[in-house]
Image (cartoon, rainbow, N blue to C red; front, top):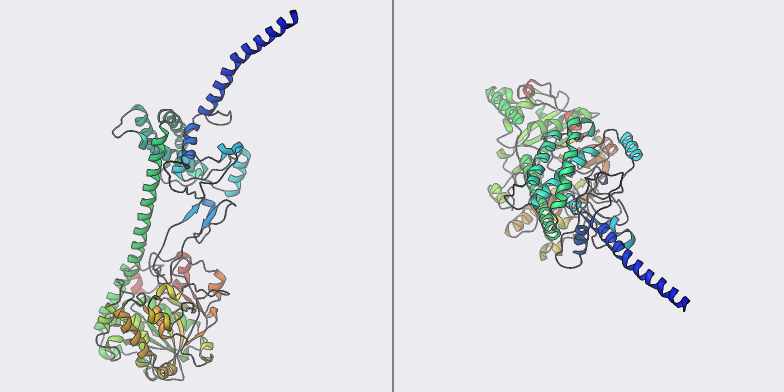
Length: 601
């Protein structure tokens, strides 16, 4: 009897204990899920939202409103070419698209996509979650570095920008909270956020490195953290926050894309314009040319113009400095400049200025001829009107000088072979060995733009030519290897025998009736000289200095001719600085005309 009462008493006490401790345990767990655990090593103000909001945003991916894919960018994930490099096994990388040789279809959609649907283990689920503010900032989550690791990294990198990034992140967080506030709200927290944000932005300014930060800027960081902590306790409507942040994210991406489109447009606009200094140079030279007596306007050594035993070089140009660099670099690189005859073909507008330049800067050992394409009776009378029918507003593509190259045998009837240059090249080596190359019955020698070991071209024919047209598809192959203008060895005798000028006229007329290719001389050149091209060694002609192409320095230094193809010409402000020096070394900046027009390197 006593034993049974004893067991009843124990059971009753056990039930009472359970009823007392169970609520405490449940309440404690509930509080841990609501309130973040503040570590002694972390600032208590460094919280953006509570974990309920975390769970809301993550769980929302399964049902209900779906947001865009989360895009995370790392500064250290970019190489010099602008391509995103591989960071981890779970990350997919997408390289930036390159610009084509003519500068068309510039694309700037850089993305590094991390799939938001990845499955994670429940034990470390919180470590994988992205906070709402971090989603808005598009910053990558990394485990926090210890003080030793931070100092070691700072010593390794020299000047760091850790604090700068932290300050800018706080400003972005403040802007996000201000967007959560109702329109017209003038509450105390809104006023405080605006004040702290304004103070931080003024304190930081345009500083990019921590070493340049003032002490006042670091002091203003603490009040901002306190204001953000208060805001995180006030704005607790998780669905509204998620919707607002996604809207902000979308608007930011749209704004960034609009800015990139505008930058692309301005780059192309800059490529079409003439710099003020060069316009001044052209005007001064033109004025002085017409002030000369007619007998003083004649170039020397005219008896060499049609001598087939000499080496004849041709450049079509409407730019004084560009043509001067081509001629200067070719003559200075030659071992036998007496054998060089340079034919510079221009138009009526630029003929006086280019003629005056070479009259003032006579090369005693070489022969130079300046020709006016408008004075020649080789082009069709309606050639300008035909060029205007091309679907392009870019004057470079519909220029008479750009297409006059297809009339070379008619322009130089007494010559057998020439080397054709574009005016955006620089010659670095002696080219006399070109004249001994066996053309093997081909008309034009050119460096191909196919990648080694691949069938596809860097500049595929299908990119510029409409192979959906039955006539094009039946006559040409989209897999044919492409090549580039810029430096070409041309057999004029074989050209005349194959009547390729007539072929060009036929194809051009077809292209004016229906869209067969993009505007410009390169696509129709591929068709005109289809299967008539002799591949040259790549060291003869290196292309890509007028666009972001990441050419190796050793390839540039070893090249006989370097080509600034693309829109970033070396005489423009938008030219690539690291490549300009090869062009600048052949420009006489000491010349009085250049100094008067303030043309500088």
